[in-house]
Image (cartoon, rainbow, N blue to C red; front, side, top):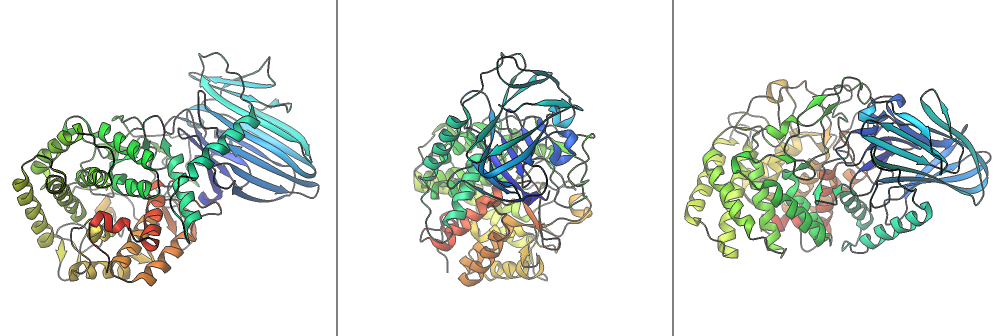
Length: 598
């Protein structure tokens, strides 16, 4: 299956990917970052999957039940029609995944194949039959799952299989439950009751959405996706529920995104707050405050769901990778990089929260002051930049701009909110960084700000210059940079992050266009007053979403397919904010830059 052939279901603590043909090919339990028990997405069916589909030929169409994360796949066969309903009940105790086959017409013969493999597809469990309930129990080491169903199950070649028929009006549930192997077997949930409760939860959540107008349905789906990618116990949001989906088919740019990035903080806050989700915004802000607590020189660019710091990277050599895109990685070594831009993101996010009236968290200001003291010492150092290059550190222009943002927001905290601090020193440092960027980040020959000091490479992160308020779009250097990126850093009209070269990022070249950057270009066009162009670009980006409204990190215009981890929170955040920039009087891009569009 192509990446865009999957849909997401989740319970706000973990998530599964369901293919068009009724196969669950990815599921990590009990958390987003736990080892997968279905890992066919990165390997073969033998690495774990759970498929339910008609026997023989069929046609299918799918959708989310309106206002929910409940997936419905309609199968049409020569003998009749059925609907497969997939959902994960919002968790109360044990994680559950429910699949329900509903007869709609005639009588349809279906087959089920259940292959569970713990530890990312490597551990074959010991399977036994349940006594009290019809079903099976699978155990390997610390993990246990129970599959309960009224359908008769049989074992075959380390696989559990079933063949059954469903007639008009019949409803057959399959309930999969996880718990630690040393726990007593939990009682199976009532599938119909769980379905009703799941629908009520998501419908009630969607009713809080304050977005209306032309793109309200797509924006609402994006906001639901963000909610589904939030780890409810802590408020942290994973960048994606997957690892190692490639940025280039057959390539090595395969990373684990099941963690929380500080870089996403400000734009995520704006999307949630403007969408009507103050509670989620506060929870995200509180997660951020807890994650950065500690010694400023130990602040990381990403953390685990609860703020864990050890995200050691390793390769899983038994998985061949998505379409042979190896290696498959878990953990992320970029967590140990110096990326100066995150200081600006943290300061900006907390500033946006104050401006928006989020409940204040006074101890955070002391942490912010400590971060600024450290940043004052290190902002002149080279770093690995926003794109987390694995080549040599450099003086990345965007990183320096975000250092300016950090001190700018500190000054505004004193001026606008009465916080205490050495504001004169902060103003002086802010001015020094601004001068440094304008002198060294600008390339007169290129007619643009460039990726790092002394080069002539463009970088899409420089579209954030006016969005952060560093310089206005009316500045000819900013306008020229935007036009250069639009002219020279696009493919089929979509924006690339930068032109990948091993000399820059230490990896073989090749990746798709970066969807969030394309939305950033639309935001810049709005600031320039070129609304029609922004509208057209936004519409083109939205048309890349799959049939259920989901987007990955990247897109390949040549093969016309999505690339990278899926669905990608940052892409959906960018979609939400650009939609609001186009349709609202109060625009996120103006809220952040604190300047009106042209």
